[in-house]
Length: 438
Image 1 (cartoon, one colour):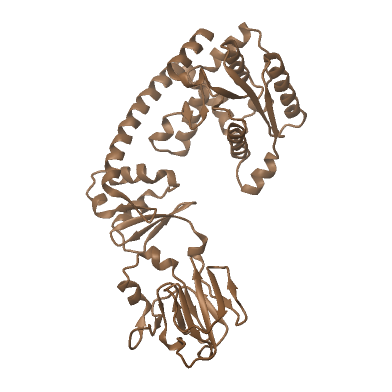
Image 2: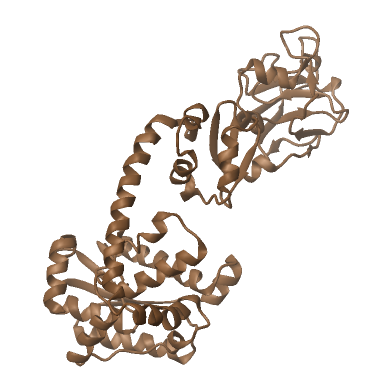
């Protein structure tokens, strides 16, 4: 295996040969063999170990073993202890997800602080097949069937081309001692259930299932490359960025023969799952929207606009402002000071006659039917018409706040227009300057 591993590195991971490496070692056979292989090839590396404190004394024994391994291999070692269960509870995730989040955050911290180039993990072909089957049961696009990436940012998996049997045989021949995690034998976890129940049946059907799986992965990755090329071409036609927001042209999307497939490729990384609703949005009415856990897709005229889920956009108010207030920090930033000025400096500022206003003031979002008496105009005007005149998008409208008095009279469409009924003329003696800090 050593000769094959050396050739594999030279052909597929030449970046590792002269790199400064971290090897993540749990104490299990895969990571221990990876450390020994790298040592026999005289690569420059250190070990790192995560103690997740999930198995009592066994977790501490794993840490002690890795420290001894580093001593025997004559390389540095870094260890970290995590309160994994506490993290999982706080963040409402499974223990497996918590452990993954914690270890990779720490790996990248080590890479940055200790100036390492890459972190190596010991995922193998069996792990890859297990992930494939798990993704199959959960439902996934093609990218879920292309396997664990050999390189993901600075995480490298050089053992993906080797089976667990290859690794075990190497360990036995070289009299390498490793630690067994007893929890790996339990079928309480999905991955272990796949490992101990499903894959043995597949191997009964086809003793060479791992080799066949490797071939399948190669075909699927080639197919994914074709899809990526096609998606890139379509993206150049339908995707644009306005004010740092991703937008999709609905007219051009409707001209595509495989609209749903392209929408999936363009948007699946943002967590959307209701793909029929996303497709319907393309031809839907303005104002319709679809949510994922982290993002929102909004129909605005002839475009879909992608935004993050922003709590400020869902807050409607009203937020009360006392007469004595001089500074507001939520939901937007305002400063209020007494002044002798009579003319505002820009549309982010107004001068009001306090004698014409009933306190307290309030900040609120606009509703259909809201109207004001804009400066520079006669009569009243609906806020919706003001927005239309300014050609504001739905997203822009959502960001607008109104300043009103206790009688619900609109004093200011903040950042756009003041109501002339409350302006301070030269005879006003009780004036306030209100400034919006964007």
